[in-house]
Image (tube, rainbow, N blue to C red; front, side, top):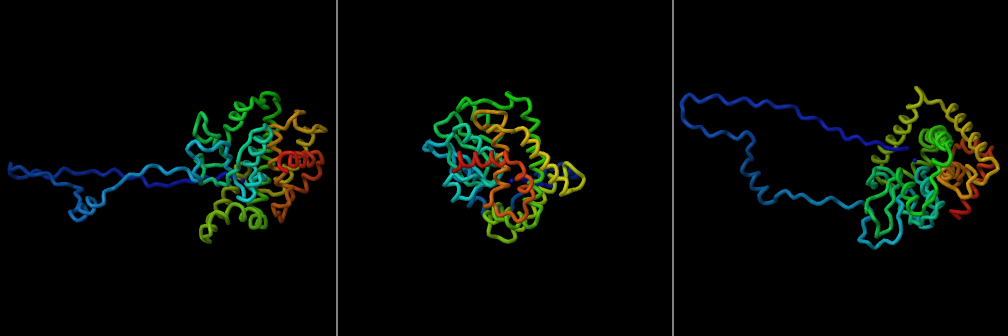
Length: 311
């Protein structure tokens, strides 16, 4: 799913210059006039109904339970019915961490959520089981560190210097093609993105329209960071070359970097390959699936992880 930036515009107040009142002609004492005096009727109202400052509201979903939760809770984009069955999230970023936590053996409950409900402004985030050392949410950029502390698993970035190089293929070439296919292809946007990100958020047609404009604009702005204009053919060709490189990297191995168990890199690849090939997504145009299907080992990799961890 693209990241959304919200800007609250405020108008800076100008500096007001107050002039000194003219000196009186006689030395008589003059009481200073209040420049901003409150009219008596208004003052009586405020005296009767004084302003009250309330405590900050709890995070939506009542995630700060009073020590009663015995399981970790991962907040992701997902349909509530699918969350109950542990199905994969429909958002690549969420699915990446959902899969990774499963791969390293950490149990958790899935909680349907959205960016606006997130205390960090983005999904996913995790609340650890209580009692825990911290009641603060764990954002996605700290989930691997937290997971390593829990189960003492290996950190792949330190095991293979090629990790970051190949990860950039996913985070840029494949992600860019995904953004265009999901948000800027009108058929897919209406049939796939709208049904998952917009319709569940509100029943107001006006708000739905505003959200649609916001999502498509954010995707367009993201793609224009890398080029002066958006060329669909180039995006799809770059994604295809990325799939080819990943296929070569995987080779005949079951998991990337010839690991005995899937790790973060496998989760990152799976987050896209699964959703691209998932017929339940309802794609109307899916050139990415056409490209991906040429690389049989990537398809097998996706199917194996799906059956083992999400069956």
